[in-house]
Length: 253
Ligand SMILES: NC(=O)c1ccc[n+]([C@@H]2O[C@H](COP(=O)([O-])OP(=O)(O)OC[C@H]3O[C@@H](n4cnc5c(N)ncnc54)[C@H](OP(=O)(O)O)[C@@H]3O)[C@@H](O)[C@H]2O)c1
Image 1 (cartoon, rainbow, N blue to C red):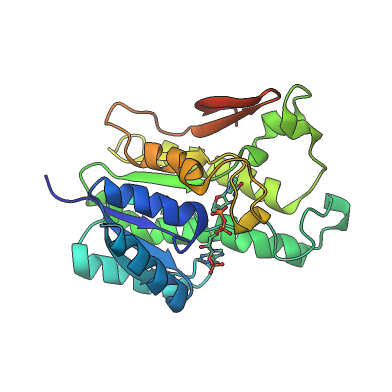
Image 2 (cartoon, rainbow, N blue to C red):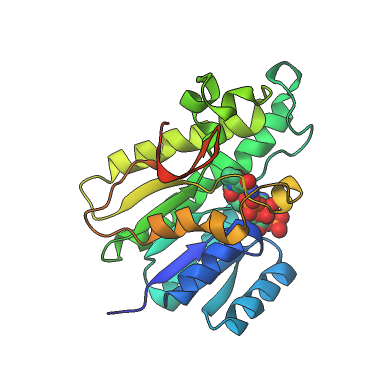
């Protein structure tokens, strides 16, 4: 069987790096997307030192030229793409956690540029390559924080979080995009799902999360390697319950 080719955006650190490491350890060729060449090359070296066939790809998800160059390079090198993990994301560009009434449109747009528009840009650029694979998998790294059900269910720990606009609404938009891509592609072998890493200790939250980056990558890896009879159009991953760890499963949108 041909070696699978996997592109992970934001793979230079955190959950993305761990996703690349784990997919690499399964024998996939991993294309480590990073916006900064220095950080990307460092990740490439670390992944190779761990035994993975890893290659840095310069990829700034908000830059159309960068996205196009990455797609052209993958096309020239491999001619197809088996796995796309849209992992790059940000919690805020300014005034993190600000409530909706104190959120400027610029701040909202800044987060959407990366978490929402960046995913659409990368996915649409890579789709011709994904269609050439035998059974491609697209994983959008989302969050339970973007689940409208969890945010509004008094029994969910998420409902206790202060109201904020930027990050939760961006991930809710990403969830719907996941469902819509899955719907568009339902008559193809391509599966499109959203991953919930759970609260993971990375730079993203100054390492306050209670899960390791390796654990946070597990939902992405699971969805990237789904068998042919696996689901498409779901949000899957860590389930946070009031008593702590609810294990893995499908989350309500
Ligand atoms: N940590 C959590 O608790 C948690 C929970 C649920 C979901 N998530 C999601 O998991 C994903 C990864 O988060 P993480 O915790 O691993 O965060 P992280 O350690 O801060 O890593 C984020 C990655 O995204 C990259 N990135 C940010 N903006 C980018 C852009 N415009 N273009 C390309 N790359 C960009 C960063 O690159 P630089 O190094 O260059 O900044 C970095 O590689 C995100 O989508 C996040 O929303 C995280």
